[in-house]
Length: 84
Image 1 (cartoon, rainbow, N blue to C red):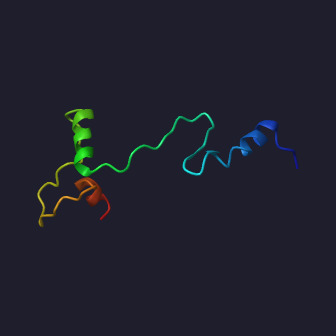
Image 2: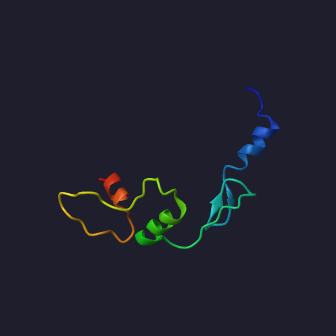
């Protein structure tokens, strides 16, 4: 069997990832970071309003429901429907 090329050997050394026990990234030069905790639904819906085009489909609003549901603290109507 052929010996792996030096490039393949180097690539294999990266399989463990880079970083500490908290955050491990695929590349040593990655600028990925983890900030804050989960955002509440209202914050995420407001962020959509501020950043998406007015013609976009927004996650807010449940449409006409056969049974009314109380809003979830974290999940949008779209996320709840998607996961049913």
